[in-house]
Structure formats: structure tokens, C-alpha cells
Length: 300
Image 1 (cartoon, rainbow, N blue to C red):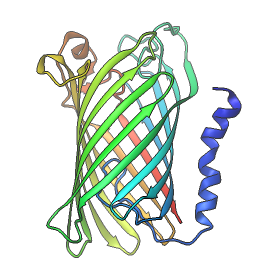
Image 2: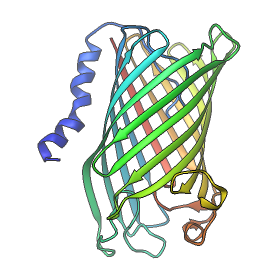
Image 3: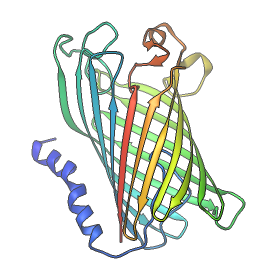
């Protein structure tokens, strides 16, 4: 990926956002940063959405990874929605491991200089998301949707599926949602292709406390497995995140911020994973102490 193409991938959200803001529409906003709801765009509706996730702090030193996802969504029917994502990342690490060395870890190769800061910006992958709503929380006792998303990149390939539940209360002022996610992933950030399976449960509550405003809480539980499959003897670790979210929506645009902190109750299921647990928190690959996610969208 040349620097020109990378600047295009990272700068695209600004251009698309300006176009989206210039066209009147009905907002298709989400009150959560991590939890999906069953809401889909109506037939023929478009949305441009940008995700920025900062994963920060490992066992010591400094670690910061910025994950950018630029998304264009389209309502194929009133219950079927598709999206195309461009994914780009930036990582900076220095003395971040438990032994005081730099890397290796998420996005950091094995041959990195352990005594120096490592920085890199790169284009990761392209993703194609599909969501089909089976039941609506506004018409049925509970909302139900299914989700599938393949991703393809030079060093990362992924297939992710979700079951999405949603229940509204208090004339839709209070929203509960939960996701059950199964993800198969192949990555080659360390010189060879590695296979992993991840099972994740996320849930959240969001309350509309004023016009345009929602406040809520979100929870994530992640369990990683070696290779493809969910056999008990292949488990690597389980960790948990919890934190607040804040959401604002206007007619044509919306923004959501979620801040999650890893709880001190992680579990490691092999010697390597247990050595990555410090003060109850797992600091292995793709596991940091704090995560901040910003999402904003423009509808047209």
C-alpha cells in the first residue's frame, strides 16, 4: 500500500462525511459503540459512518493502537442492510510487555527491536457486512437479526457472524440489546499465518434522557481459542470489559462515544496466557486495558 493510497483510505471519511451532511435524511443512529441493534435502514437509504477506536495501555510502558473503519451502508430492503468497510490501523508501542521489552503483540512483528519504540500505519482490509432483521422490536415482542461479515486483507482474513437481540421499554426510551458473536480469523503479523476463533458476548442498556441524547452502559466478554473451533482444550483466555456510552442524534447525523475498561477478572487457560495476566487483566495480543470508540454517521 503506497502512502498516497493510505492517505486516501484514511481521508475518505472526511470527504464522504461532507457529502452526507449536505443531503437531508432521516437519522439511522445507534446508541451503542460496540453493541449492534436490530435497526436497519429503509429500502434505498444510505449512510456514511466512521469508526475510530483507540486501544491503549498494556502491562507497562506505552501502547496505543488506532483502528479506523470507514463504512458506507445501504438499505437493500426495509429489513436487509449491506455495508462496505475500509479498515486502516496505526500502532505505537514502547516497552509495553511484562518484561519491559517492546512487542510482539497485535500488529507488531516478532523481529521488532525489543529496546526501541515501534510505529506503523497500514491499510488492513476490506469488509462486507450484511444484516437481516427477522423480528422488529417495534412490532414484535423482541427484535431479532442475523449478521455476517467477511473481511479480506494482505495480512488478515476474517469471517464474523452475530445473533442480535433488542428489546425496547418505556415507549422506546430505554433500549436493551445483546449480541452473540462467533469469529474465525487468520492473521500474518508475525511471519506466518495463525488461526484463531473468538466467541464474544456483548450487551448494553441505553436511556434517552433528553431530546437527542442517550446515555448507557456496555459490557463485553471475549474468549479466544487456538485454531478454528471452540473446543474447551483449545481455549486461550477470557477477559471482560465494561464502561459508559453517550450518544447524540440530530436529523441528519449522529455521534456515539463508548469508553471501556478491562475488568480485573481475566482467565488464562495455558501457561503463555497465564503469564500475560497481570493484576487480573490479560495483556496478550489484541487485549489492552482501555478502549475508546467514537462512531459518527451521516444519513442521506
